[in-house]
Image 1 (cartoon, protein in one colour):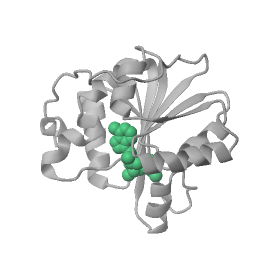
Image 2 (tube, protein in one colour):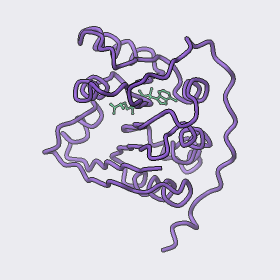
Image 3 (tube, protein in one colour):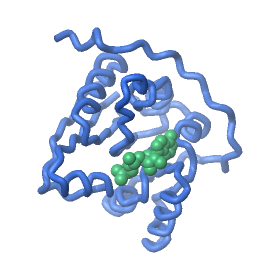
Image 4 (spheres, helix red, strand yellow):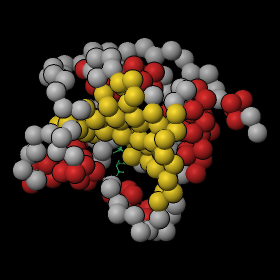
Amino acid sequence: MDIDKNLKKIRPFTAPPKQDYVNFVVPKLPLDIEIGCGVGLHPILYQGQHPERCLVALEHTKEKFDKFYRRFINHGSPENLIPVHANGISWVSQQLPNESVDQFFFLYPNPNPKPGDLNKRWYAMPFMQRVLEVLKKDGKITLATNEGFYKDEALDYFINHWKLKLVEKIHLDSSFKPRTHFEKKYLARGEACFNLVFSK
Ligand SMILES: C[S@@+](CC[C@H](N)C(=O)[O-])C[C@H]1O[C@@H](n2cnc3c(N)ncnc32)[C@H](O)[C@@H]1O
């Protein structure tokens, strides 16, 4: 099957209106960005496993961010983790210079499965153009999902539209130690979870 034919055209990215953010200074450490970190299990685990890296973890839902922030404080406010309560699209667009990011994480994003909602899925958004601009030359994007259609579509868009290389495609099972609350829930139910890593 020529999957390329299924790709819908994506309009060019236009930056969202400017927000009044505290100015972000790009750290000297390798920089990772997580968009939609929920209540923040992955950011806490990840920063502990990678003290040599800096992770900015973004969550725009207030109640989830507040839980994440409490978790952050309870873990001693690690210096290499920066919790941000903001919309990831506007924060990334406004705050990050080109080629400044080593890795993006999109872990179990809402799959927006309705047929008319393709443009709400990360890989089909104009914003992905900005993600790729701020990503370093050999930077990576990690995307995890429990939805087979989302995994297939992400492979199609990232490889055929955005011209990224697939560097990892793993089917997670119940023996995998969950990194996020959604991953924990899906694996406990015996659902298939997929982890995809792409490189620029
Ligand atoms: C399905 S939840 C997954 C949460 C977490 N990654 C996990 O696996 O447990 C998706 C999260 O992404 C957040 N989100 C969606 N769009 C966002 C955006 N543009 N900026 C920041 N957060 C966003 C939602 O508020 C929600 O908490």
